[in-house]
Length: 239
Length: 239
DNA sequence: CCAATAAATGAATGACGTTCATTTAGTTCC
DNA sequence: GGAACTAAATGAACGTCATTCATTTATTGG
Image 1 (cartoon, protein in one colour):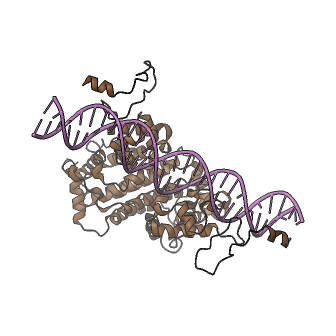
Image 2 (cartoon, chains in turn blue, cyan, purple, orange):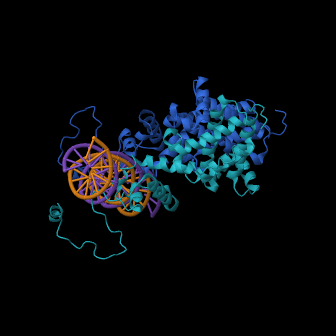
Image 3 (cartoon, protein in one colour):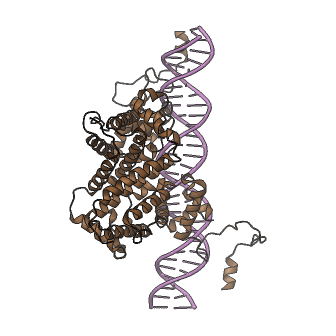
């Protein structure tokens, strides 16, 4: 046996020349210990996104950061969208739903929505993926929905309206997440300013208020309206 | 002169063999009459999107539908994103702002928001582009904002809150546009249903209502809350 | 009339996601 | 404990796409 194996080996072109610090290229074939798994891929993807942004998240770069050939990734994910889904589900777990069950309904919704927006405003490229993606493939996302749903139910929300209310809030959150990423001068009409006097005046009037983050003002305004409006749908509960 | 030109021509390999119906391939060099302009590109892009969807909108396909080489497009647009911006601005002109100035504020907002959502729910791939894009490059979009802003002002809306309110409404509209495109079974928890009992129950309860379009129910719920909430910000006007 | 510019072609490039044949190692079954 | 099967890696290749560039031809402005 040993003889056979040795005989089949190529004539030894220096079997690890020295204990160098180089990445030590792996030879083809299944490695003794698995190099990849979904957790590792998720972590590496998040790291890459954090350092290079979503433009830097390519399958090649991801593989590189994991010390692996790009094709190896496809043993663990079906596509790049699968990677995005892994990232999304990881982020969903970071959304703060802790106030549901401990705080009054409106406080809990407020905390959840702000947290949800803040998390995804750094990850807007995920939104087109999330918005269309069945929750069955995203357990942590599902857990978030469960916590929110339970919070609404316990607050006396009529059951047939809970999902609609969550969907509406989520739509607002996703749209607002985009707004966070918009450039400051997005509403500068430039040379066309004279043709849109009311708009220009309103933009200037808001600028005069010198809010640190106009996007936060808009989010607050909309969120409070939604909370007030939805709060009125609740039935009496002893709390 | 004429002699010189004639002498430089190749020896006539049949100068349009017959008035065939073939596309008649254009020879290199500037054509006598311009083939492309931004309007034509916009129209062709919309046609392509309508027939093949956004996956079918490639620079090559666009060029093909215009009977032109792909590189020719770059004499008229700087990038594919520029094409998307042209499309976006075209769509903005289709959003119904006609009720501002003729109908009560709440009716006008309702008409505008529904129309805005309906238009862009067929064009969600534009949303990431729009959300970040300075309005200065989109005159028809700017015109829409002007109409809405004027409507808010005339309705007694405090000027410093107008832009924030529009931004919030727009965020909701964009998020809701995505929701329209979601598959029906997006909330089916599948094998994880047992682990999320409240959520599953709420999903089932909504399904029991048998609404034609659940996404419309959610949009209506959120929009009415926003209209009510924002309506309270208005100062008294004689109308 | 001549120089500059505009608008087309066509060839080439460089990312990028993905597939496939191949190699090697672990797992299961008799 | 060996054979068959499966899992996990490499590396080469592919196809699609947006974009660039040299070149050609026509129009325009001084």
